[in-house]
Length: 301
Image (cartoon, rainbow, N blue to C red; front, side, top):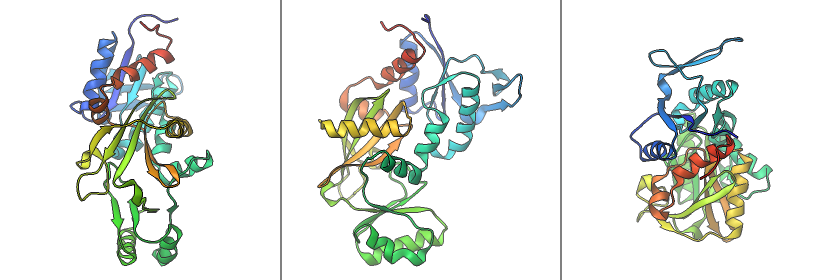
């Protein structure tokens, strides 16, 4: 069994974000050495005998024990390339490059959830605007949700309240060659969803996110608020199975309560900590560090 502190890298873009500050503090409080690694400042040497990862100025990063990836969508391609290099060097990645890539592809992730027997809102996807009418019918007609595949934090998500509005929005996105999903609108959810934070196969905290007045999206970044909530055994099971389907050790799983039961909306590989830690008083950052300790056989206190 290994003892002593670990050398951990936090691979992200902004050291001042609440989540990143908390993870740095948590690692230090557990006796580990942690360094913030800006994705854009990392570069690599591909070589059969001496593969390497360097940081700006030439500092070698090969001796890290673990990497915590906190990757914004615009950095997914390059960050996953870096993670693959770390993985090939034997560095433990809290979320793997493959798991992150799967979760970032909205369409693929929904297909994976369905393949694992998990329920999602009825969803349509098409390449041609000629199929708009059938696409609208496929998800039960208006009102419906139109989502950009590349959207995050509620951005690129539009509620089309009438068939005419749906037709206009879909065709507007298509004219820009944007990839979109069309999804049934769960009216009974009343602008609320659930965020379940899963670490190492367990739901460690849950909140209900409530949309701001006049808004249908419950994202905290869009003015939504977080409330304490007691989730059901079925909701907990769904969240755990969803994270497992993506092979994510750390995941923010978003659910919505419908008349058909809980439905999965999305699985996030870099979930924010601020809303859920503030609402629940759970030290989620420390739980993330403990998951690394468990994997690398560091004895618990």
